Length: 299
Image (tube, rainbow, N blue to C red; front, side, top):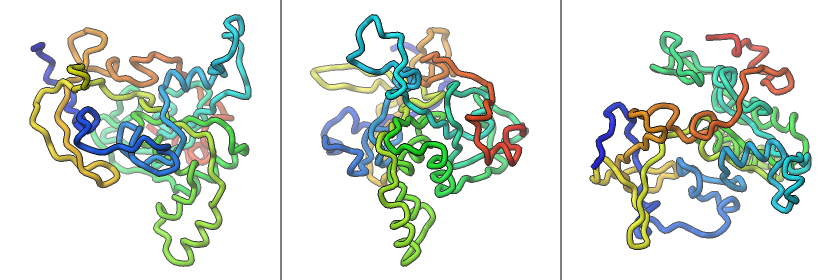
């Protein structure tokens, strides 16, 4: 068995993905049911689908139309263009984002890091001092003010695919705001009435995120797929929806064969997929609230 560097990050793999007897998974339309199947963190899903960063990039350029003739393959189609909403915080956005991505941070607008130490993509390298939180209702109203057409194709993006699911759910089913804000009784009823039928109808989540996670090795045997791991001892895990599963620590793949697991081995937009990104802060794309409070200028 090949040896791997000890500095790679431990990652639990959910066994139920590969052993069909562990969890029964519905094959119905997930977006209507709010089931927790499809995104990498097992969060409930009210949005339409999960897509790759590559598909989001092509969609941003308007090059996804499948029936386009070969000689038209480089033409952009404005009707099919995907609007990318980057939900990472102000520093993460400033340090690199898809060049046409609208910045709508959630659930935090800004995070101060211990000793101001950050990774090259803007995340805290050694812990958080404090966070400035974003209100889910404020988030939805800001997006609604920027994107009027509820049929607009939208793809949400965060660092690894967690926060983007939260936003995709809010804008697809804005009545979730009522639960997130803890409303009860008549206050809940009023909120539910206010946001009923105001959701966006064509929302996707970018599965890998901007940075992504290291990828695990998978082999096939006798028609089944198995994750290759450091330790085959199964551990009880609680998924985001409260259901139970089992998982074990998986091998992280050294994709670029440099002998170590680094950012270049992560599966997101910026690294392994190597898609174009920008650090330009365009007025029409940045978040007005974050800009007014000066969060883009903080370390």
